[in-house]
Length: 350
Image 1: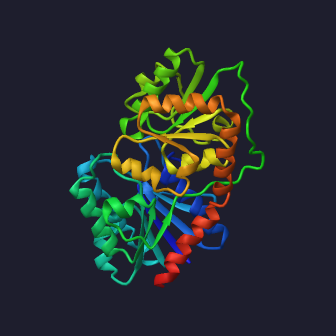
Image 2: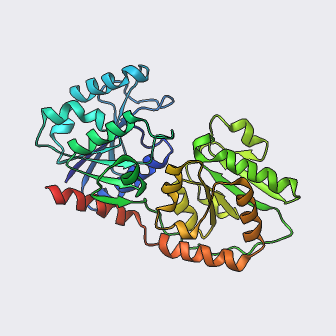
Image 3: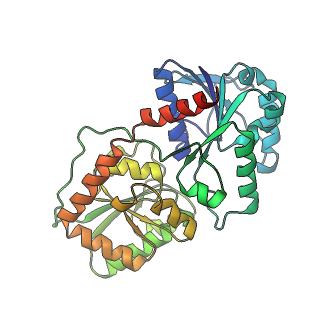
């Protein structure tokens, strides 16, 4: 099949949607499908040829980057103009699949009414409660698409979406994953993964770290991410910025702080205990409705979080039991399995 993905950001950008789209694209090309991706150009990305036909390849994936020179309010018109000039890419594809950005395709949904177009809904907007506009955009996208995939069961509850399939992403099996026995003479090494913003739960994590340090607990912290709370994070540890390959950082840590699905899977596959936090009912459902929720620590209180960190650091048998069960689940969540969900969705409507 000739498959065209539309996504706001793509390789070499770093992020959950970017990784999801890249890994699925890599599997599909290995299956013999033709995969093309259209995404916005990064502000620091230089085209070899700066024109509307800028194109390059990565991992057998053909990638088009749209140069964006306007602000957010006018950006959609620039994207529609680019797609209009390159509508041959749309016409030539058997499948068009949008990753959240269905509005990119909106004018062409009526220009090519029989073209099979689908959507994957990733995550949420980071503002609680979800704005009426956000819910409306998702509902219109759902109705105009032939079918959809939801990343997480919470989407059905909070956005009223009726999913064809639900996924939580994938992870590549690590051959040397094994439980690490704690050395109590050293500091507890913690890795935070995510944007350094309030909606990732960072303030809760920082308050828990303050409680641990004030009680004399020895902790070493690294932050794999960046954002508006960078200075606050730097008070507690080293900020790495956004990291493309988290493998070694996760492997060299004892506990992982994260609330994102893909980062959770990456930590599970390396047999690391995960601590996730929420500060509103939507994020609580985001975590607790997930099938892996019983194998991670989920808290909203900094005091409870600090208590659980201390408990599991001093209880290696209980920690190992949790991480082994999480690993058993995570190793079944391959990117090949995720890719098969896409194929099953498309074949359902072909």
